[in-house]
Length: 390
Image 1 (cartoon, helix red, strand yellow):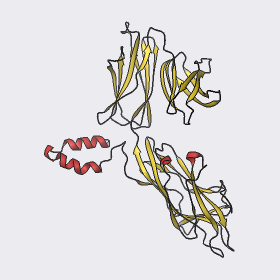
Image 2 (cartoon, one colour):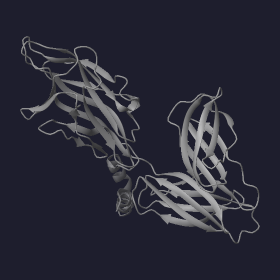
Image 3 (spheres, helix red, strand yellow):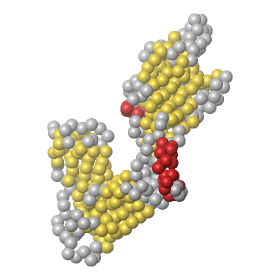
Image 4 (cartoon, helix red, strand yellow):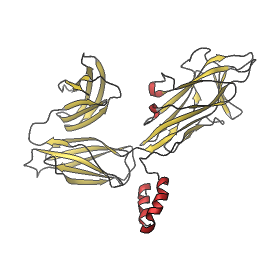
């Protein structure tokens, strides 16, 4: 039984006169999937003779270790971990670092609010304090190009709190951090060490909302073959396929109840249209009803039965490419985006069915206001160039 079903059954047994008082008490304590919780520990590395870390409820973590370019890596007294020698005496050497990662579970998201680094340099040598005197933290989100934070490293432990900022919210995939040491000093007889006692990360984890993805339709022998994708499924959700012959009044064809929690699932349905002889086209949509009884509708897709197929339409909005219409051939397609001057900006591939398709494709980069788009496949099918404005 999932959490929301349990809550519903629990509330149904409460005497009506006591319901509102109890509701005021329990509401702040209930965590509903899809809602954020307060900041929590989402990763902790103690270096107590282990490099593995402790994850949060909604994510996994990697081990934390120095890069292979650091010549010596070892525990000291079973309570701290160091990397010795090779640290640059000048600016950052991008091959010399400690690395660790956080990855949200499938169907979950992370907002990283802070990282606390308990680190120092060696306290040996004359004068004491060999090793890196500066540290820098970078991440994989920009290819380790820019510093998130920097600081000075002393020969005694200090806790350095890093607030990474808005760029570290809405994390759906792994993010890796690298902690660099640089500006190393060396006292006589000292060991050039970067020493870590603890690294911890705090943040917010929550279940992503259920949402409908790609919907396709294609005609074949008095049938319309439908397929659709659902992301972040929850047990008990219902997916209702609805059909219309006028685009306004819809009739439910099939209701499917979800029996699984998954990051992504695909469904298909063959609609018998043999009795729709008077219709020239049919319209379909998917209605998603969540466990709270709220309905969400997909966009409407159209499949023509008798008349000429609608042309493929393409446009850009908010760095997403929208492609919809009837494709005359199934297979792998590519959309090439050019500037008005003809410079190639990006390419994205997608697989279309024979028939009506509706795609929303993330471009993952900023594009100029005016663009030209060409869609083609490897069999020679080509869609006319389009000049668009976002």
